[in-house]
Image (tube, rainbow, N blue to C red):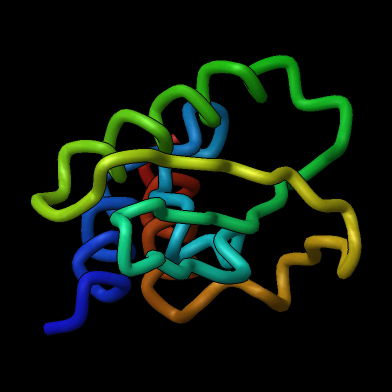
Length: 104
């Protein structure tokens, strides 16, 4: 597994607190790259630009990526283009959200 793949796997542990689904399955992570020096660069978005928990999510991303062996530095860049839409979610995210709605 590549270092980038290990970072993505670590990011699957970061849960969007409002939706309750991880940010990878939600389609919020657009790109992950890791330099030879161990700097992880993560391009991601949020479900809405005005997200009140943006700082928490970014902090959780930095922490999760920083715990991956071989990563020495983490740079998270929030981007708003392309805009996030529910179509970016994978099937796992859709099923988790449906299950939560059924339980409500």
